[in-house]
View (cartoon, rainbow, N blue to C red):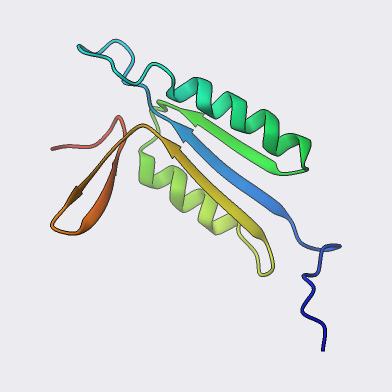
Amino acid sequence: MSTAMKTSSNRKLALIYGYNNEGELNNNLNRSTNNVDVLDNMLTQIMFQVEKCYNKKTPFMEIIDKFCESIQDDDLVLFYFSGCACQFKGENYLFSKDNQI
């Protein structure tokens, strides 16, 4: 029995999102979009189909939902978020431009 991964029909998909709170007071995330650009270049070199997003006006969950709908069986999927996050009562949360606190 072979445990090798099928590679001929597997797609490599990546959603990478950078939120750098541009224009906001106390902007401490000025490298988030740079992180996305660097990762995009690296993933493209190893044949990933990359969807790159920064501070989009489209609601964050719409971007995630649309990406998830594109995933097929046997796809290799990567999600990367560069921005604000926190942990509250043992749960982890990502913050994008459209979050209400």
